[in-house]
Length: 86
Image 1 (cartoon, rainbow, N blue to C red):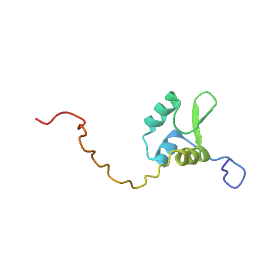
Image 2 (cartoon, rainbow, N blue to C red):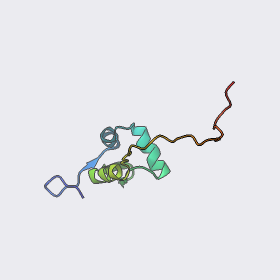
Image 3 (cartoon, rainbow, N blue to C red):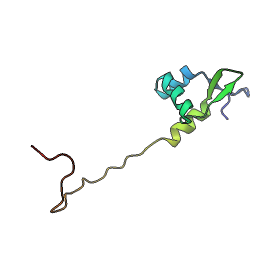
Image 4 (cartoon, one colour):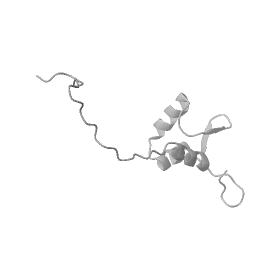
């Protein structure tokens, strides 16, 4: 786990975690309810916290690398998808 150098684990409030991820705080609440998003812990009866490690792990696990691909060529005689032109 990430610590602050003195052995303490760094935990963030949902507002701080949302700011770090660039999402709305309500989005984090929705993710918690749906069982998605970064790992979180509940301290006491209501205090939700996110460790900086769990945020890093979530970002790393959801980082996408889009490789440049070639454009799909139309096959001769292929039927176009979608609505027919008027």
